[in-house]
Image (cartoon, rainbow, N blue to C red; front, side):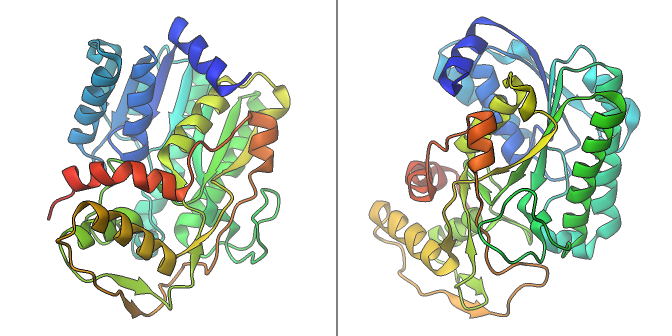
Length: 346
């Protein structure tokens, strides 16, 4: 079924969804879209990396978009996925789980491997058990392009992975292994989505582990120095949040049995160097705010645990899920600049 047809179907049929990590960047965007589609949503978060204002903004944006009150369709649980009872409470009477609660960031996992494992492995297993026991229809979870590790070949294809380069990568690989084991032993349906450098509104620009796009945008808007790790030729397959929302909904609703219990690359299928990324962001911001300082970035040492290049082959997601990215890097950034200007502060 085409994505547009699924959206039409959801508008007429209400299901119950659980979003873990609902106060985070991706979780809050999923919440907004599901509320627009008049779905019932339960969200769980412990605010370790997410923010209450993300939830509030998601609800407000959904209500503005649909011109109706939607808050009654959302229930929030202040809970921690490392606690099995919180997971069981959240999974009650749920049809679809979108699991995005995790401690992200390769550098953070290198500095805090125990915390990373507790959230990303223990928490994941808790959610699998709770979802299985609650007999949810399907479990969609966030995996990562970090799973390709030291495998250098491009583009990245799902069945070819290398050795992990960080505790974060280990944790995401374990997630995929656990999901596969649950499919074999309990006939439990899941789909893993390997995200490639997602960006979009409500992505936190602050802190040591901030993603590059919101971080640089914030720094440029405040006329501060930009630092690039390495010579800037490092490249990534940047993927706009709208594409991620599409992938989650497609994965939850896909009817093709061959698509189940699989791993998919979720990206655009195009790579951009950090040098080019900086030029695009700066150019788009200078169009709207001519008073900004036109600075050159400062290069420094390459960051431990990172890979030089990342590019996804998305043929599998296209074929089995019907995935088709709606916006590339430039289109996504162009759409977001006004939001960044209005919402990014010191």
